[in-house]
Length: 324
Image: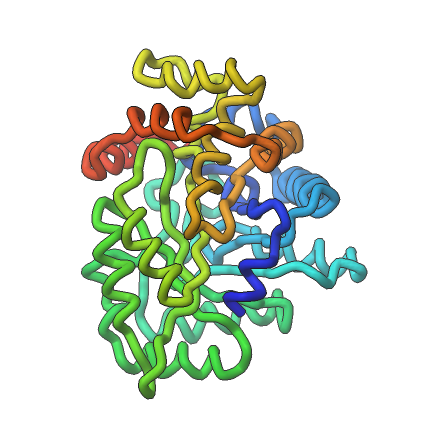
């Protein structure tokens, strides 16, 4: 499956549905990007428009999660309505339960649980919606202290899913993503590595996991990059701080948008198989996909390294982003 995933998108860009599966999220600009009334029907309409546009422009990897509100439902309905769409890879995630009850503001938006009971419940829910179209199933937001890295009973269940033809992966978060990835590479069941993919935050601001992602790629894992635009911080209207001047200058030099430059810089990493767009509008998606036509010079790539922050600083800032 990792080889299939690597070939899933000719653009090396996939579509993540986190921004349109539920009314609230932490990406910047949602007040203007989404409909004034964020009903389930309105977001379903937006999700369908995004998936149609993505597929028409060559995207072949689509990413959801149990905690993304109705994202799996929207994706399943879209696939049912598009029976000719047979050449995509569908990935989803388990490990968080959505608890916001379709509200933008909530005391708790999602609850993390990496137990075997949570897996049993959520894999059944995902399969009830996506059926045999589910190609990749990932543990959501694993950190070094997650029991998912040491729970052998869980590993046996995941290995059974793998034997049924679904690639087993994990997503990572937090300032110690590299430690998580390396720990995951050491997890085996019956002498075989368990995980066939890893999905990790990596962008011009947060590069700390790059070495570990190269190791995962070399070990045969498919590598999916999430939050390549840092929850909107690297997209045009928000690239205003003086320390972002390198990104603005290179966008001016190339005639591309800041978001396309940021995505192109990540896609240029030799270990990156798929880089996710988290677009909330079709215009944003089209701008993101222009990254496939951007060729950055070594000098430009080197200049963009000036944007990098420490992992601790990056994740501290991210933790302060408001749900909107």
